[in-house]
Image (cartoon, rainbow, N blue to C red; front, side, top):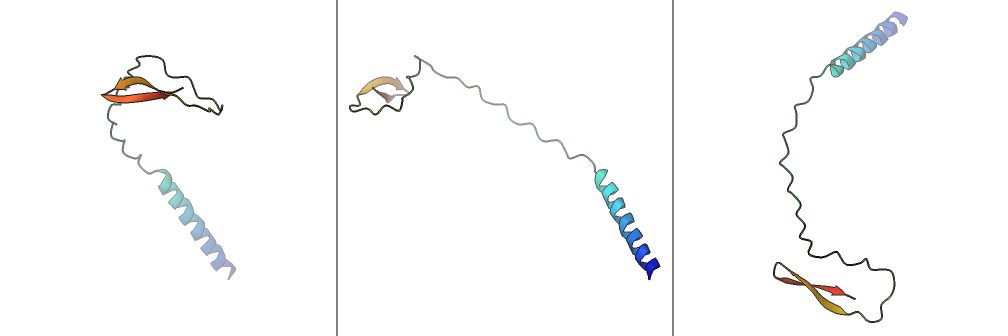
Length: 78
């Protein structure tokens, strides 16, 4: 009975070691296809950006015309 258990344990260890060796020697994965070139970012900065709005609660908000971009009016609140 002991010899059968020893044989089974030996067979299981040999199988696991051989499987581990087979997994280690896998071929490398194929290379990824090259990605398309990234577009150039062109910012149309006519004037500096508006100052950041603070946490101050405004009682009166004035909406003034700021600039045109692509034929669309953009507003700024003061």
